[in-house]
Image (cartoon, rainbow, N blue to C red; front, side):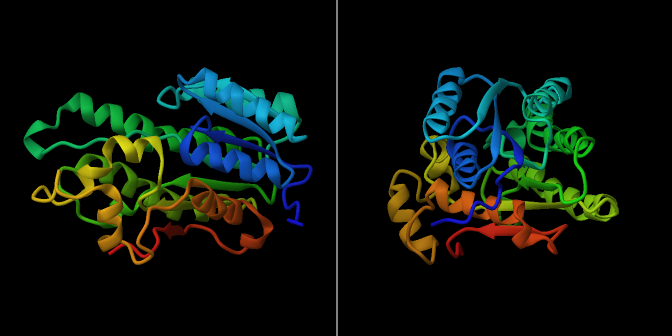
Length: 258
């Protein structure tokens, strides 16, 4: 029987309607947490997940919030506190992808990527930390791309590298209050995003010549993409008391990508 590490605790998951975010919501709820699922546009998926968790005996609520707008993030977090009476965990999973050569990048591309992937996470931390007491746990989302060169991925990778610097520096500040802040850097994961963009991670000379499964077989030590639930286990670890003495760090979950 799995230990209910989050019994009596409440969590906010941004980007929680699908992919890794939905897996995190299931994992935390499965271990006893009441969860607020933030979503931008996929209302049907978010509410279906709430119904699923409720059917399993959990407490959950779905709240529409585009993290590119800090005010919407504040409303999401305030709603969670109003609904559950507390906030113990923030799992910031919302993010968007981008591929484009240097000469194709526009200022609008930059603003859009950083508004969600970087600024969105910073202000989620700001709003969440305002409600947290000692023992609060914050887990942001980086990417293996932050430390791995990929053609046409400069903008996305930079937005994620900033997150790793963010958790390092915020750890000193939030540590004074007994709150930890870390990040997960997922590798290739079997999500809708991977299905849409996965082949772009290949060398341009290989695009169209290898399937994602074939690519994973030669680029990942474990020879496959991660299941979202496997990545969610890392978020649950960092959000739990098992990681009480870990802060300011980024944990790679990539199956041994090389």
